[in-house]
Length: 231
Image 1 (spheres, rainbow, N blue to C red):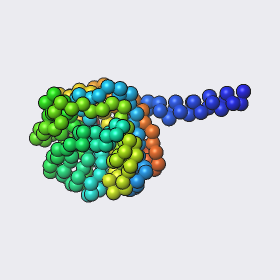
Image 2 (cartoon, rainbow, N blue to C red):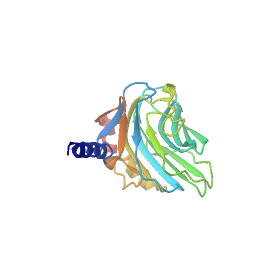
Image 3 (cartoon, rainbow, N blue to C red):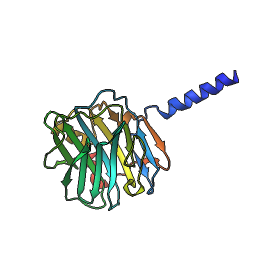
Image 4 (spheres, helix red, strand yellow):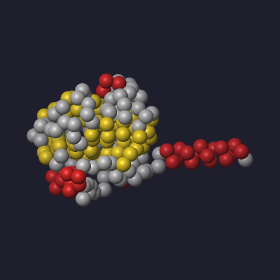
């Protein structure tokens, strides 16, 4: 009987660890540079991606490069990676190929980012604080692999591992949503203003995740000047 109770307890703990959590009004805080601290995002993505849109908010005072979103599959690093190279420069990697955008931005200030890509045309779009940047093209006809390891806070060199302290994220990440389609400009603006439609890959309001190391969930603090964007 004791053995049965032990297994029930273990199973309950596992279910709680991977249960969907509503993180509305909250952020993941990555308080210090590290080669271990990260959050794993769990999704049942069983088919390759032909299209996607990813949106999230981030706040950091790092001036060096760091990973914002790292998606690897078995044997393939940089399958999908959002990387900030330096102040005002962002890169998108798909299938190890990359394009870069330059943007004039306040530093340090919170930023809202939306990235979309479609396989048929290879066109990638990058939006910063509701403003579209110049469209770029990469990996036309490519399919992003399924069964990914998705990590916040670190850049993966391997499948869920291979972290480098010098590429780690320090700051806050929140309001993360991901779709298997390319959102329209109107839908991206609605997401930027804080009212996203139902996302079917990752949803901040029902997020399956696992925190590893020193990462804390805290309330989102919004400057008074930004409140109109979140209503």
